[in-house]
Length: 125
Image (tube, rainbow, N blue to C red; front, side, top):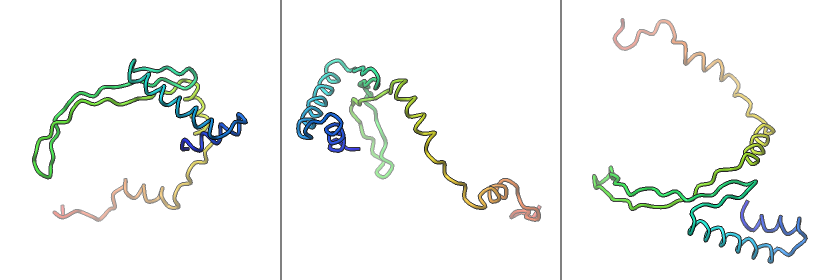
């Protein structure tokens, strides 16, 4: 789902215009970004916790040229879902249909695990 779809869905459920909901979402994202930039953590009860993680500077090796490159330190946002969200995801994953096994897959798997008799290999032992 993209932001436009979220705005449309919220607009229909709240009986508001899509334009005003879109402005509210833009403002919400700006506020969340400001909070993460200043404090580094945002706890949203019922949804989860956003936090900023700092990765240290490191050196990497380019295998094509043999050159060593220094990567600067960087920051990234991580998200840890709440128990409520994890429980909903668990229920949603159970309701999905499972993939049917491929016909003959079990037979082929046994064949791979069990070596055939009569094949002695390259040395002929």
